[in-house]
Length: 148
Figure (cartoon, rainbow, N blue to C red):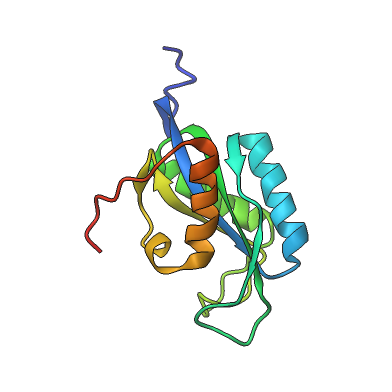
């Protein structure tokens, strides 16, 4: 095994990650930019078609464009989570006091190596519907091990 593959934050195998993506600030442009960026920096297996959804929580804001991606990465879970936060920042994400407020980009890990990691999949159609489309297209399924 090369020393390059053993760098900090990398594992010795590829991990599969299902990502929920959402934007309501210039959403068509930002979702396209995110897909392009993640496709160039990760091994993009497939993605869903975007869907337009109403905001949840903080209602006086524009509708969201949501989608899902399946990627492969040599990064560990924590390293990949930090990478996604850096991608959000590169796409102009501003984190304010209102966690449910408008945003250029929101990237959340929904499943890691087939295991559900985000309860939002069970609670929100804007997460579940695009993820289910990716699962069907890729022949994958989810394992639910957590007790929420």
